[in-house]
Picture 1: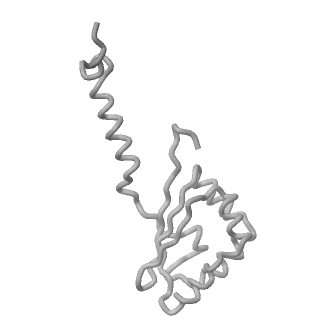
Picture 2: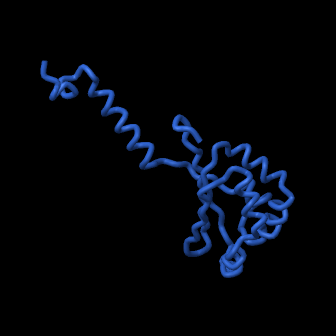
Length: 138
């Protein structure tokens, strides 16, 4: 990742069958080491899952190229085995959980808004502005 390009932040939602919550949690404690390696090899990082009451599952990860990460995992035999085992835990899915999870729209990001605000502030204060010339007596 370079300073010019920020990672893509991806957040998604799934619904875990309430009667299977304990087993779902157990299956992630821990995840297969080979599946962890595939997620990393796909280019996903800072990946977390959050579980709300009633089985609502929120996932979040960052990647430089989400389409490439999706394609990598779609072609992975390890991911196919993992997702086949996970599929029965979810309500209302038509396909592999990792490929059909409902994406959420990001509406706020602190880092992005602070950077934009700081950029706007520096544009308002130019180098020829007297505020920048304080202490530069001639």
